[in-house]
Length: 215
Image 1 (tube, rainbow, N blue to C red):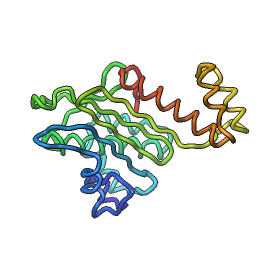
Image 2: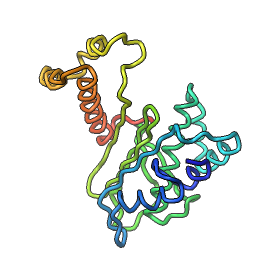
Image 3: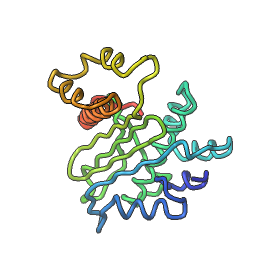
Image 4: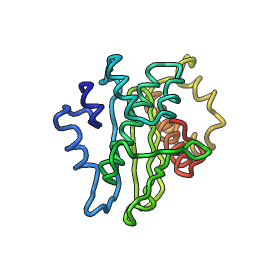
């Protein structure tokens, strides 16, 4: 993925020349502004911006978002957050036809992003959400319902010597029934996969309600 591609909205792991068009055809159903759902992802590890590329990217987001992104401690997190904002603005531009520079995003008190621009009647109720972890940045959009999304890299978190140590630390995050489901896995990796699946489902639900979202 080259630097120009991300600035122009390429949002998948496919070659830049076909990234957006193919992904849009697969993930969007738009006929006279009738949308079913949108699901996009981007591998942030594929984008290595130069200083000039970063300046150009920052010019494409709102000043308050640029300032917020600049507060991330780790460069990798700042990059993923920038990609998330670019993806979101690209989606809104493609869907609503609002000029890219005129798209105005704000956040609820709990941090969930929303569009302040006036929408046509057939797009009222548009809901969207973004998440990132590891090298993945993901976006979801819905018209028929509220939406939240979460993503986690399948790995033992830093600080935990083993998967089982990690589970012990997180023991209060799930019910007994949920832990029983997690423990059905035949090995640590399978159990960790189920753990993160349940975690992402819960986080997505919380973000759907709009009570927690700080990407």
